[in-house]
View 1 (cartoon, protein in one colour):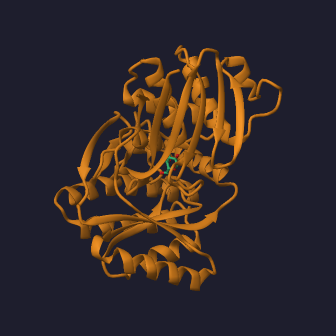
View 2 (cartoon, rainbow, N blue to C red):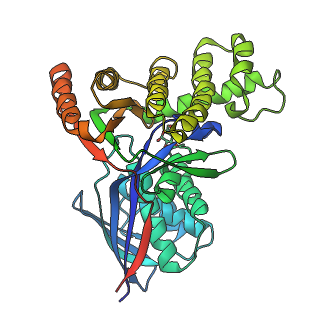
View 3 (cartoon, helix red, strand yellow):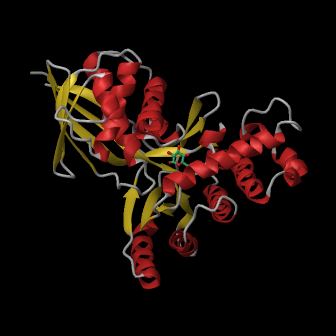
Length: 378
Ligand code: GLA
C-alpha cells in the first residue's frame, strides 16, 4: 500500500499587514512550526482522517455533492476543523483534479487562531499531499491560489493570498517580498544573528472574521470614492501617498483612516525591504514599529494586550523591532531579536506580560523556514 508524508509550515508576517487584499506588497516568512500528515492511499473516493490534536476522526466522500453538503457519509455535519481538508478536496475536484482517497492522520504545532496561519498550513499540507499522490506537478503559485479559494469559497473566510503563498514558497533564512498584484516575489535574506520571536497574547477576539470583512469593505469603498478623481484605479495599491494626501478629504472619517493605513503600509514595505537588503536592521525595525502604530490607530485591529507586548519589547536590549502580526484582533506579536539577547528577552517579556495582564504569553523562538513538501515513504 502506498504511503505518503506531507508537511506545511505556518507563517509570520514581518510587514505589509492588511494589504494583500488591496493588491499590495507583503513580507512574510514561513516559520518552523508545521502541519504534518501521514497518509495511505485508498482505492475508493473516500477520506478517513484522524486529527491527533483533537482526538477526533472524520470521514467524507470525494464527490462535489457530498462535500457541498458538508456532511459525512452517515449524514452528520463535518466538524469545523474538517472544513479545511474538505475545502481543499472540493476546490481540487472543481478544478478537474481526480483527488485520491486517503486514510490519514495529521497533527500541527502551529498555534490555532494566533495569526500564524494555522488554517493555511492545513490547506497547503493537504493540497501538497494530493498533488504528489496524483503526480499533477501543480505550479506552486497555483497550489497556493487553490488553497486560498478553498478558504474563501468553502470555509467562508475572505482572506487574501499571503498566508497560503508563504506556506507554499517559504525559503530557509529568508523573508519573501511578495507582490500580490503581479504574483512575483523575491527572497530577502534575514540577518543570521536575528531570531523571529513570536509572542502569543492568548487573546482571541470573537467576531474577528466579520471585523476582517468590514475592513475589506472599507478599502473597497475608498477605491469607489476615489475612482472619479483617479480614473483607472483598481485597488488602493494604485493610490500613491501624494494622491492620498490630496484626496483624503473626500473620504468619510473611518474609511479615510483605513485607506491611509493601506496606502502608507505599502510604501513602508517598499522602504523597509530596501533597508533590509542594505543590512540596516535598525531602520527595518523602525518601520515595524510604525506599522504597528498604524494598525493600532488607523486600521484599529490591535488590542491593549498586543500594544503592551510591543511597547515593552521595544524597550528591551537586543530587540530591533516589534509589531502585531497577521490580521490582529488578538493573536501574536513578532519581534526581531539579536540571538544573544533572546533568552533574557523571552524571560522579561513573559514576566512583564503576566504582571500587567494576569495572562501567560506563549513565546515561540522561530527561524524562517522552507515551504511545504510531500513525498512517498519508502
Ligand atoms: C489574515 C489573512 C491574510 C491577510 C492578513 C492581514 O492572515 O488570511 O490574507 O489579509 O490577515 O495582513
